[in-house]
Image (cartoon, rainbow, N blue to C red):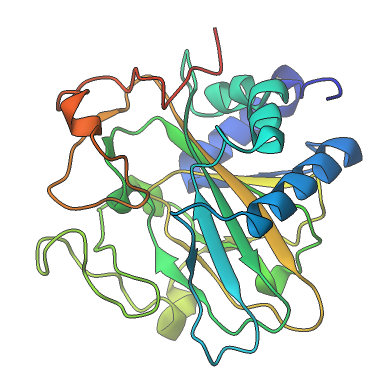
Amino acid sequence: MTQPVDATSLVTPEIVEAYERDGAVCIRGLFNTHQIAALAQGIEENLNNPSPRAKVASQPDDPGWFFEDFCNWQENAAYRKFIFESGIGDLVAKLMGSRQARLYHDHLLVKEPGTRQRTPWHQDQPYYNVEGHQNVSMWLPVDPVAREASLEFVAGSHKGPWLMPRTFMDNEAKWFPEGSLEDLPDIEANRDAYTILSWALEPGDAVFFNMLTLHGAAGVSGGQRRRAFSVRFLGDDMTHAPRPWTTSPPFPGLDQELAVGAPMDHPLFPLLTG
């Protein structure tokens, strides 16, 4: 792999300020064509050999196909090389104001041409088994993404509150019990009431957002695929929060190895800095 990204020059004080204020930022030209090509090859390998955690998140009658898979860095050499050799750990540590950055998990999201299925508005952290504020998710497309098909973010929503996580297709509360968290507002019906951020992206550009930032995306029209590789990172204050339900993604048996409130110091979540 080529020279790692230069976190010092890329993560300017203005970028950090925007991340802290809005909960989402775009950094352009972050990765070069060789890195994107290698990652795209890893994505194709993942599509040809999905893990037991993979799922189709679109209906059978959808003319496209929305595919997701999780936690494959240990088996996928391209993912592993990208995560550990690109220098992304130093960049996200600086972005979230943390001494260290730890890998949480990888997440592949592919929408084939013609996919109608939206990615509904949601926060990521309520699906997870972690607590804390120093975190960041990177969303990196290996295909050009039009503004209309890109992720959208509600600026400032990372400041809370936690909102009810639901299944994407059936709107079921499989995680927190009904009524235990406030439901999401109907953002689509009242878009003018929110500051919504989004960017058209080219391969090499990346979006970074807090795990509590409300985000969603439309389907993919025309003939363009939308293959995106997302990586979640944990900072200094993130701790283990075991749940009585199966989280997404699941980490079976982790509650037997990490206590409630313990730092995420475990081989599943290796340090990327220091």
